[in-house]
Length: 338
Ligand code: ATP
Ligand code: LTN
Image 1 (cartoon, helix red, strand yellow):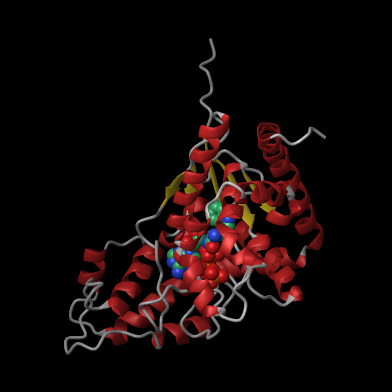
Image 2 (cartoon, helix red, strand yellow; image 1 turned 90 degrees about the vertical axis):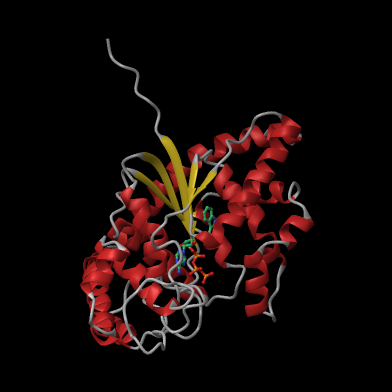
């Protein structure tokens, strides 16, 4: 007799196409998705509706959205095994986003640190979307009934809010949404800016020298690592001490993530050598990690037919699942069936 096939757990995550993907997006997000692709049913999307919460040049937004899709595939996400799609191609996100806005409290939204950070950075454009962003993110997640949501440390608060909203909804209307859990990688969870190890390497920050993008050429990557801020203590030794030596700790975390070495192994490797040897070594390891990704993404970007087919198929597969949840929700809250 056949043994019953166990249903795989579901993973879902998204990235806003607000800037070119960085080493932070790769180590903190996409790399982990790729490593777990076979173990789960996966949904990964370009969060273009979320990108609208800050101003973008429309042509750039379009290019980045498609480039991000090409990069997902180039990083190793097989579009057959993973549902890859553009958020705005699945209208269920916007609809459930609105509904969940009505189940998310003003006080909850006011506590979100990303909202506070982004409002400080975009003081001239603190729009309603920026404030209610977590309700749309809750919709993104809950539509697909995932078990896990792999995100960087900075997104944990949003996933926790999603759980609160799901709980509130389930208590009011009966079991509707599965309770998702954040899934936070240990290494690479927070890649810091190379010039300011106290802030996250972010793809939408203006100055570019502290961040490394997936499409950067090798010479640029090496230059950025050679200039990376290290910490002025007289020893110049390579030792993992995030409080005392945040710059070195950040470089060590990056090196650990791309080579698979432990901090102890890295300390041993650079024993008696200074920053002058360490920084280019990290740069070279990053160059070699990113080289095949950049080349493959460039190849895919030139193949417009393939990209269009990817978008279409992804949207169809995602819509099928999303619409099923949305139909349930519409009924529960009292909207007249279409
Ligand atoms: P923006 O600058 O537009 O706010 P971002 O660079 O912070 O964007 P997101 O789109 O917010 O990137 O992040 C996508 C995913 O990648 C999230 O899960 C996030 O936690 C993770 N991520 C982004 N940057 C980093 C980083 N520097 N270190 C670790 N993880 C990161
Ligand atoms: N808010 C996230 C991007 C994002 C997301 C999601 C992540 C939008 N919707 C759903 C996981 C699940 C960010 O700023 N990184």
